[in-house]
Image (spheres, rainbow, N blue to C red):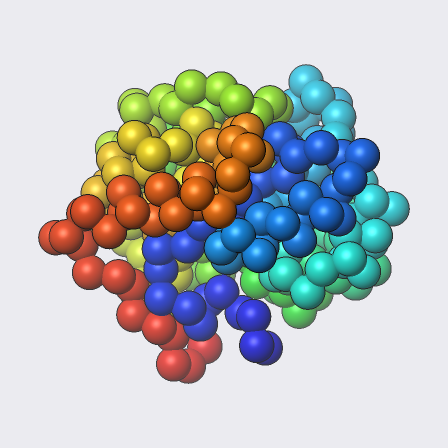
Length: 238
Ligand code: DX5
Ligand code: ZN
């Protein structure tokens, strides 16, 4: 696949459309991708797993038709296994991130989602211990660490999750990625990168700026200042 971000060396920047203007969503997506975003992060909330409701299959199908960007579906929903097939097969997302708090057997959940032909990520809330994702680690392409309580954009980064980022990263294979989501800006991105994160979701820090290209360039410039960490190698075989 041409735009498969698992074949691009990390770090990557993932604009989260939660802070976009939904009235002109396709132009917002095309703008941030043209401005240097690597892939699009979709925040899908059901008003039950989290106290907010966002978008579902009809909107995501339209997004799929409006962009060639790789789509990362962050499922903040109570029954991810029920809805994963529609997101994978009908909406054309390429990565499904399910919350460990929403499933019983996380390794089995990851295997079931992989059968749909998508990349698989396991996500954990700020207060969820790292150990919760370890049973599924061999089954996933990535771990997504929440650095805010999920539900809303524009919240403050929680530095207490950084120790968890480092602990999880130590157990991951080089071809797996660690994504971080919530409160990422030009300051917090440096701390998250130093702790071991590779993919950086940013909503407010990109869509909240008039010049989105400048905002993304600023995030990349901060990462480039961190000299001691080598970029993750491009994945040759997967
Ligand atoms: C929060 C979402 C995040 C959010 C990030 O529940 O999962 O993806 O949009 O937004 P910022 O970068 O503004 O914290
Ligand atoms: Zn998210």
